[in-house]
Each structure stands twice: as C-alpha cells, then as structure tokens.
Image 1 (cartoon, rainbow, N blue to C red):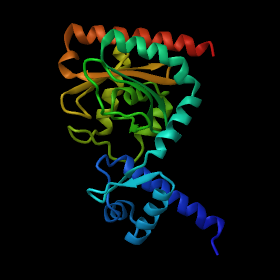
Image 2 (cartoon, rainbow, N blue to C red; image 1 turned 120 degrees about the vertical axis):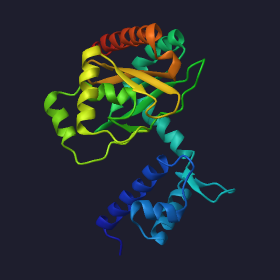
Image 3 (tube, rainbow, N blue to C red; image 1 turned 90 degrees about the vertical axis):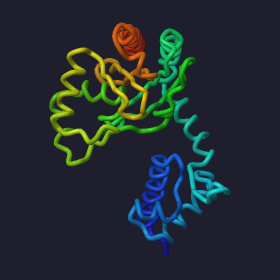
Image 4 (cartoon, rainbow, N blue to C red; image 1 turned 30 degrees about the horizontal axis):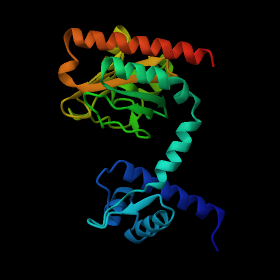
Length: 250
C-alpha cells in the first residue's frame, strides 16, 4: 500500500528531476540523472516516464535524452500572469529595453538567489543567459547580485556563513570576494557582472525598493565600459526608481 509519506517522497524526487533538467539545457539520460541525484537508474527512469505522461518532460527522439516538456510553458505562463509585479513592471521594462536596446530582466528573490520572472530580448542583441523561470544564486548575474547587496547586514552574514561553493566562469568566489562585491555594489548603487555567466556578455542591475525585486540589463561587454556604462547605469537606475514608485502605490 502506498502511504502518504511515500507519495510525498516521490513528489520530492520528481521535483528534483525537474530541477536537474532545468540545469541541463542539452537534456539528460536516466543514467546521468540517477548519478547526479543519487538515485538508482530504475527509479530515475520510472520518474521520467511518469513525468513524460504528464507532459512535464519529453524525450528527444534523435538523442533519447530527456528534457523539460512544453506543458511547463503553460504552467509557467499561468504563474507569471498571476504575479501583479510583472503587470506593473511591464511598461517600465519595455521602455527601458527600447531606450538602451539591451536585454532586460525583472527578478524576484527566491531563497538565496533570484528567479527571472520577466525578460524582454534586446533589439540589438538577445542575451539568453537567464531565461524566464530560471533561478540563479545570489553570486551569479547582475540581478541576483543587486538583491544580495540590498540584504540587511544580519541576513547577509547568514548567507556568508553558508557552507557552499559559489562558482563562476572565472573560478569559485570566496567569502572575501563576496564581501568585496557587496561593498562595491553598495558604494556605486548598482551591481556589475563582467562575463561571469557567458563569454563576451556583461550585465548590470539595480535593486528596487531595497530588495522587493531587481531590474538588470545585459549585452555585449564592449557596451559596458566608460561613458556607455555610465549611461546604461543611469537608465536602469531611472527605471528602478520609477518601478519602485509604482509598486509603492499598490
């Protein structure tokens, strides 16, 4: 007989499978998922088959690798439409995108990181490093870093005390590195992400109303230098200030 506890455990494992596939753009085989999640292969396969029947994953017929299913787009859109902050932010994000011609992101804090809840591709360059619905840890990306720097000092210390690796393309960040990032972000008012996620792509971000959400932009790194960088920062700051005022009225 299946108990309530075992059903909950299965749901938890299924959620882990979805998270693992989210982190694997190329998809994954049952063997790879079993190894990464510390499951036996038969369990991983059964979970994938059940998720496939629900439309939450599908299998690439050419490679036999499993990937996230289209059903998740429907669920994701339903969640996004329910977020009042996205509706309020939409005109601000769109005007910023049209002004700076960069890809623009709106992010909400989720645990020790942030989820992109809205993204508009730039007309000049479409940066795909952070997709709608994707979670990034605080140390990666301009939006998450802006939210990290906006944390109250006590909460920041709790985060810094976590025993976890903080990898980037340039190597893992130490606690001292994180403190330096936070200090620099607080001093200038905005965060900078110089090619930490994607080669040749940089981004900058502002926290909105302390840490309600963050607005960030991303584009080719040559635009994130000198006067162009200052102009981008000013534009994003104006957008963040405007969005903060709109959110205060709701």
